[in-house]
Length: 143
Length: 319
Image (tube, rainbow over all chains, first blue to last red; front, side):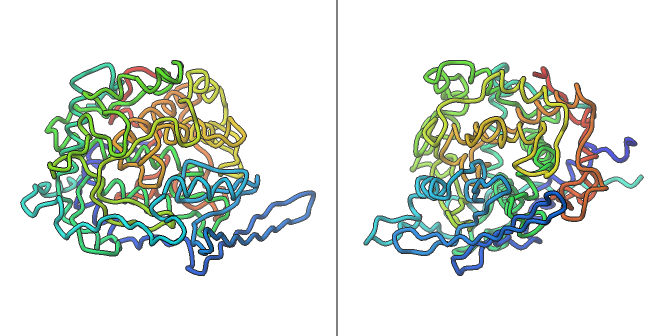
């Protein structure tokens, strides 16, 4: 691999500038992992002795009678995972949902009580128009 | 000239630069608002620091390929885990160098295995959690450079969080940590790092969280039947804001990943600067292969381009 192909400090500085990074992020739609109908469908596939195996799994998760849109899935070893908890996987979907409730208690109000929503920040709450912004992004030098 | 990355507990100057720099990035406007990133609710300014929260979240919610059941995504649960986080750390380090006005600053790491060799009680009393370093645990954390002070809007705040259902929302609260209460009682140990380094292959089919190989062990999906391991275990042990996909909200995120990057560098020193899968892998692995673009502002960055970063940084000591 040539030196030109390797990442360089110059390329890092350019990509790291807040203008470049924020522009990149704003140009991408925020991914949506669920469909809003409460059903999560997964397809597992494997080959065995010339046979093709397909396992289709549908999860419908309810907590306190409420159907939830959880971004969860099950892998070929049968572990259940959820993108809301990216450092966990479970042998049981029940265990996963218990951990979800523990990690996001505000999203799971006690039965009969309204959901506890976090305080909504005002448009410039804690951030001020006078706060410094980074200087212009350095231009990549032409070679 | 390459910078040197050091143990945060070995050098008070670097420690103070890191905590100061993270706070400076929190106070710097990126020039964008939450609306620009598709978040609902009032439009709130987004700091440079929080761009890294959004980037991490966006990337881990991007499945490769779309809809795969294994959860393999553009940052986790696949081969790209180590290269993508290496790029993220380099961009964060570059921003720290800029706000600190010190091009020689190297991102520090937390050698969590050294703490993991201690008793469970002593792990919580590591110098890392001292008030002159990362502060301790709590909801909110109230001590140290990232402690919450309700009367001081300049104190460290979490401004973006994820809900249980995968949506980002604006908040204004203190950082949360809860050591050893979220499913694991201890940090990884030195022996676990040695066991990972002894694995000869970088990764293997099916290139996901069920794979054999160094990447999957370092990420933390293998080594134990169901318990989080290595990198995952550190997230879970710290708890609080280190649990959701917005885990860069806690600055200790960067120290954890810097240590994982250091372990990867050690593995490559011993095994060669190799990476799998190659470009002969099928199309359903696009986004994971050696010459596929890494999800970053520089579309020319690939795993191959970051296997040798000796012109950018080096570690003081490899495990």
